[in-house]
Image 1: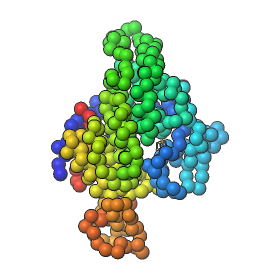
Image 2: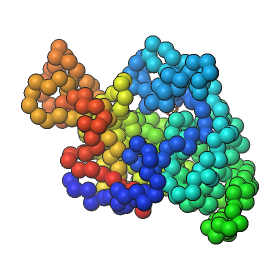
Image 3: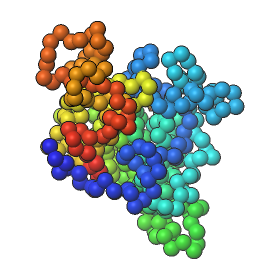
Image 4: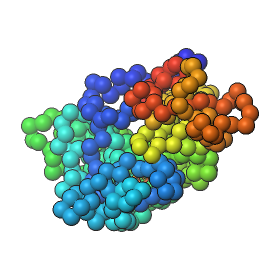
Length: 350
Ligand code: SF4
């Protein structure tokens, strides 16, 4: 299948700042929240399987005096959040200082809609995002595993009152009287609400398998945003995407990292084909640690069924051949690459 679906070129953000290693964003260094908690298997499986990279890093720097002391612990299964979650007020205004327009993945190391944060603190983060778009031309991408909270807040008049008031304040505060663009920004700043969500803020919902796709779909569809998307990463189970036609973008990818779980090629093909059928831009982010192998036998790996059953190691060969069974090997993220059936998919919202 050819990549006729890429509705925006791969270089969409290349004329902007592109410092992030994450393939679908320009920068991921605005992290105004510290700490998180696991909420579903995409955050990590039981024991040592899979795992949130932010949690792993936090665990590594959790000694007294280090940045994540009190926010995470080091355990035999890797880093583990303690449940402490706080806004880092000294970092909240960073995008307002970045003058070169960028596509920014906000809070890549936590969840903006975490239940431990009061609504007014989330509104403050949102207000910075609104102002950053108007002042600096940034596009802010927010991904959450808590679409229920996102839906509730982004449909609340009280929430928007605070966002509008604080965004206006930020714009005024950061306006350089000699900067013509700042005047424009001030002029175009509007009163936003659920019926008129602000431009430049995209909301993504993270989905990892059918169970969590079903649990999150209704809330995802009720989130007011100019771009609504799904991050199907790490894909750890198949998903039937019927009901997700409202999406403006979909990303899929396998898991990376030491404890990664493989994802079956059919899962990504299903995401790709659903997007093609509904004219939704699709981006295949990566295979992650494991990717399919179709070369000579004798390479260590494991067979995987479309239902997720995995037969790894020489003593666990599957009972019978199945043409949908894929042979997966541990390539490492870089070698596994990001081509699906030989094609690189870089679709972005127009
Ligand atoms: S919600 Fe995100 S940041 Fe929080 S534990 Fe899960 S994967 Fe990590």
